[in-house]
Image (tube, rainbow, N blue to C red; front, side, top):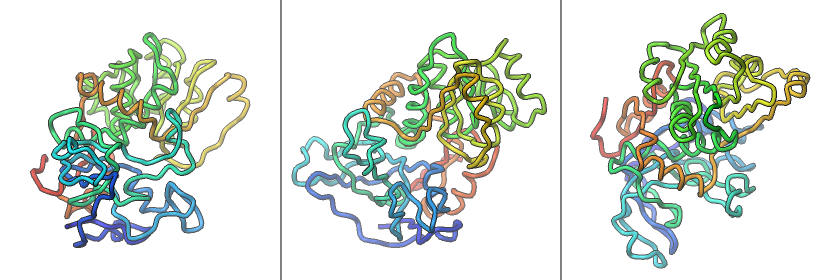
Length: 350
């Protein structure tokens, strides 16, 4: 089969298209013919070594074992099953829950042995992938591409909104609102949990599209008066911040949060280190959350909301698998709205 492998830490030249053997499922696994694999920051940061130090990076302390096939947002059709997998799985169109873990229900994502597809296991930048049958869920939508854009970004966004316990009548600021996680934060916070959303982007040309996703106000982080604009839009300080940017908007977030406010972060594309005046934290009684991925129960709730039409896919464009390098470069460009998806079989959407 054709696959794209990361050969080591570095730039996109570490991505190589190869021919390799189709994997065999073990007794509890299935073989999935990959139909679509959405791109995430996770596999880019894994390649760049952003998750670790001392030349080791990944979800586990030992670092990634190269070569590794990345890709974690995967949909496809089950074409082969292991000996102990029920025959009803054969031929199913599925979306893959993106990690294994021995953690108890509700804490799977924080178990020490949490291992991620595309990092600790070979992932979806390939024509086929094997995965435990128990972690394969029915697609929430009939379209492979549309169903592929939720697994990692959607689960992360859903978990973030549940962590801050967003409620009707509250105001949530979403940074990076045009990205994969951010655009889903906007939808989940507003259309599922009923909160008012202030979306922060770079390009205000995206205002109408973000309001369609559920944002009440859309503001630009490029504004010199962003703090005042946020407080004015909300007629006062806000309840919570859902952040994927990190340092670039951290001080703004602290300024606009009300006393007792909540700050939840799942990314640091705008800077991985920042300064914190502890007085701001304790005098405002702020609560901080670090967040990535989520639980299987949250995954099920998210898929149900998608199937009910409360959350819709937002897709910027697609690329063939052969153009994985170009797709990752494009993914990092500013001004997009939604996800970028790799397609092993073509059928592109531009």
